Image 1 (cartoon, one colour):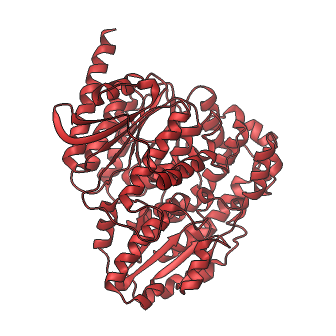
Image 2 (tube, rainbow, N blue to C red; image 1 turned 90 degrees about the vertical axis):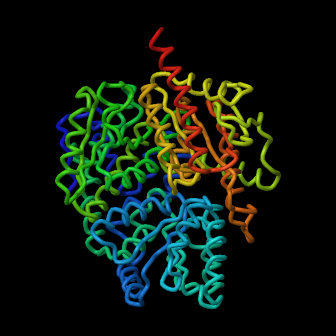
Image 3 (cartoon, rainbow, N blue to C red; image 1 turned 135 degrees about the vertical axis):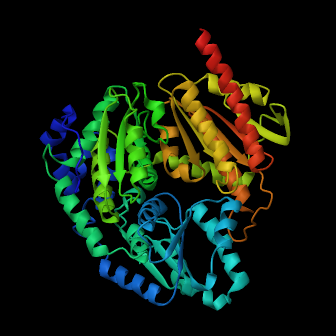
Length: 574
């Protein structure tokens, strides 16, 4: 059940009840957003999510039967290729359920890193692997590029005529992906509901097909969602979606435009889904609410006054893990507003999908922003395609050293507001620009696999939070482009961004798409996103490293920590 532990009534809850926002969302009343003609038109076309549980547009029993057939046929692994809303809910559902044992091993490939792609493909028994290709538009460049690489790999080991029987499309009607699936004779093609946007699609075929393939009972899953839909569409103070929306909005009005998401490890994958939903829906036209998946409760022992906290208890069989999380929460400053929830089973996830979707749409109503579009995501897509066709702009300068380490030639591009002619000077100017109320994001177009890579990036993320006292995020490129990337470019100008990409020691060439290789795509997307951030007046820089080895990334981390130490000492002396 959707239960939270707060007894506080936030003022905007009364507005939501008075204006009957919950029931009007359920009725798909686009006039809720008539504060702007374009917003109302968008809402008219994208409110199908509000009744996915009570009025499923695709017969869930057909999905269940398909999944049971795949399992019975002897498939052992499912590989999902997609990006953004097409992967976040499936990742949440299947990773959360993995602890309770998935019927099939489920892997998600939303990275264009050659290291990550090789790592995934190396562990597959191709004869018993089903590939889900998921894209609402059917034309997402990351999906098409990764699919090109995966099919090349399949062709090395399987007969060409057998490959289509391993492929399943999930897309909207009329897309190029639907046409390709039919023309090439793929095993199946599941069509989505066009009035459901990607980040609101958890309970559509985009979430239900993966859920069924790992053995989740869709009847029970949708039953929980239907109960939540009924409760979340009531114009009542007790509506949990109204509680959540008013908590987020009223704290936002009080300067708390960020919230830290704290949960045991099992629940962090839900945080990734929430991050995309909230940041992409509400971060636009100069405003936004930033979700932050926080790993260290000690960073919140004193109230920073710019954030609230949302905690999630999740089911775990380990007493020590439960106690460890409870003890970490005891360190939170009691002055920080807090809202707490609990999930006991994967079926409960369905309820929380519904609650967060309704609450986010309600926040859009209160903030006078359309929660269903993503205008600034499209800007980076367009810039990336332009750079792929014409070449990336030249860097501002190149440098061989990070601190005292000769790492080979790195390329540096910097926003005018933090200009410098040295790498260390640029890093110093970037981090020195961070002030209370800001947030930092390390947007890494790097592999997170392999020894030392993620650990070095986490040192930077945590170091900024600890030494400068601001929200600090570690974002995976290109995933973040379809998530917090919207807020970074379209939200409040209080973000500071360091993009890092690298040459590939062993790139993966592509044959049938615009990029020549996966490594080229990653580098181009980083450069394209930086160009839009600079255009929007953001404090940002792009560092392209000569390689992505763990030792090179660690050298960068060490250099950044020295800069942070200097800034911390100087501020303490003021």
